[in-house]
Amino acid sequence: MERRQPPQTEEGWYVLHDFRSIDWDAWRDAPERRRERALEEGIDYLTSSERVNDADEGQSATFAVLGHKADLLVLHLRPTLADIDALERRFEHTALAEFTERADSYLSVTEVSGYMSQDYFEEGETADSGIANYIESRLKPELPDSDFLCFYPMSKRRGPDHNWYELPFDERADYLSNHGEIGKDYAGRVTQIIAGSIGFDDFEWGITLFGDDPTDVKELLYEMRFDPSSSRFAEFGRFLSARRMEPTDLGAYLAGEPVPQEDEGSHPHAGADTEGHHHGGSESDGHHGGSDGPHGDDEDVRSELEEQGVYAGQPHGEDVHAVVLYSEADSDDLFEEVDGLRQNFDHYDTHVKTAVYEPRDDDAETAVVSLWDTDRAANTAAGFLAELPKIVRQAGDDEDDSWGTMGMFYTVKPEHRSDFTGVFDDAADMLADMDGHRKTDLLVNREDENDMFIASRWDSREDAMAFFRSDAFSETVEFGRDVLADRPRHVFLA
Picture (cartoon, helix red, strand yellow):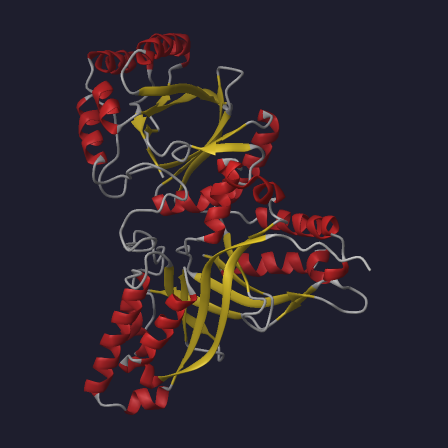
């Protein structure tokens, strides 16, 4: 008897969907002092959970559930089951817990499997950084700021006519690959977290979908129902829908007031404090990039660039954050894939642009640059971009002991294009002899030959700053005033 090959899996964070129902009669009848205490302790618990004060890393978020199935959802992702267990019990010690009953829960663990990338499991640490980064983002996902959430459990069918587990591995992989192609059409509109629950809960997976427009989620699920992977082989549990809310909105929620309390026309979580989302602090864990970000040390970079007439963004609201990936794929094929993604990215106000930049050196890799108004949006986009063909590395992730700057974006006057590239060649020769300089490339937007960027990497931040302070840099900036259509702009890596 032939035994079918199961896919290899790698697990990440444990996931708990904790659904709570409010005892509204008890809440209305309770004395004001008791309600105030419950509200205070409830907000403190939710805030502490979202800041991940209880663990080294993880994520938490709070949602208002729509319909009769529950009232509140607290979604936790943590490295260990012990972390999840402690969070459950700590809630029961709050005064808010006295007014709630657990309506439902679901336990699972984030995972990736050999269906996604068999090469990753075969190559291990030698797998290319693009795939490795994407898989890391699936194992330790960042909860998106989307307003709407849809959660449902599912299993693969084991019936007499259609038995998923009797199919050969390659056939299962083809089904899932085709299924995934549907999801790519919703990139930028719908984000998913897939977590395995075999042995943990009643179904085999827990699926959580996020989007700002609920109809995007509905359309995605409807389209997927017609795909054979679902129509022949999927069994679903019940679906629960919810809206994101801040812990500080708990009082308004319990009072029957609209949540979130911000202007309903704006994104409810844009610009929210993300302290502790990864490691109990405000810095990213490096899943998608390697710069210092738009604050802290990079304020010195701003100041020095501003003195040279280079726009480097303002402290609040005007920064542009960049995701840069390098691919060895054919430029035409790569562009076709990127064009499909950016049509979906354009649905978001935070999207600035996404473009393919080709190197002048035929032996160098093509770059995909995606610019966003916020670091969080850029990091979310990076997860989709990492699935582009033949990604070999992501800027910021290739060398942990170096300091990378996106350099500057330039819009060159058409009549001075050759002047600009000639000056770059001269500057590149000079940079090659500078202490701490590793690599600098000039790449050109394949849709606009006058749109260029320079990507640079140094041994350290101080080495790069020494270049910014140099006479050669000043002379280059002065030259640029005559040949550029507008000021060069420095962009920080997300």
